[in-house]
Length: 122
Length: 294
Image (cartoon, rainbow over all chains, first blue to last red; front, side):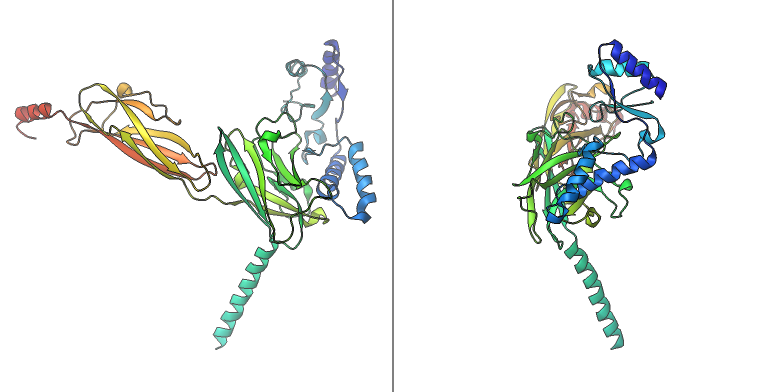
């Protein structure tokens, strides 16, 4: 994966893009932690109005943001990230260019709309 | 006497179980409608539970266990006009004080749709109350929007108290559907005759059920060019039949046409009508003369 990732970063840079690597390999316990944080915020505390929970609510929200989690996208329990088979890269180039570059490096984006930063081995 | 007491106690026991289950589980109903070439899914929640409800999550099943890693995102088709994560205003409706959000799962197309109170000042769904006005529009029918689950979140309760319930399909009746073909009798002359289908359809929930021409068959072997302009699998109500008959059947050639009407909730009705090609009388007489029999 490191070879493919470096290939993609170089290719994107050569085309004038500025690739930014987000999530890469996630150890399973870390992935589990992300699931728990996401669940705690989205399912439990986000809409909680109990005054005594306000402090906990704020701390969990900060933790949620620290991991760059999105409310609209739950972490996957069996993520390919936990197997070292996927990497999230933000690339500021047109979508067809990104997909062509990824293909040249042995990667592809299975969900270019809903998970546009996610690259994995075919 | 002993048997009577046992039976009575058993009935009371069963009633108490059923009554408790009904009283504690909110009901989430769904029906669907075709609308302007799209399909709209409408949801209704009846709070039969013991706590106020602050969120209803369609297409999300916790399996009612404490393990969040095995939760299932069940919806497949994204709402109409979606770009990334925002459901366009034209593709949804929410009750006053509630909002709708799209929640997907990374690395999959599976997702869910969640309605929740818009802010802490909005009123939750109170015990005993009913919430209407939740609607999602899709470009096409997707049975996962009626056959999946809803997860209920109660106000100021931990997520462990969430309940996942199967969606209850409110529209379970197929459309009332009839049709006739015009003309339904042809004189044999080897010419093509335009046939029109006159369709009457009515449904208790869907104002415009989907009509499909399912099949056209005959009681004789058909040649490829005996039927013109019929597009199977579409709402095709105009086509042409060749007014031809082999003459082996006393009744003549009978074309049998099948249409279906399917409401947006998936209930389907099928109807059949026929067009008969009558033998030319002169030709029949001629056959009789030559063979000596009818």
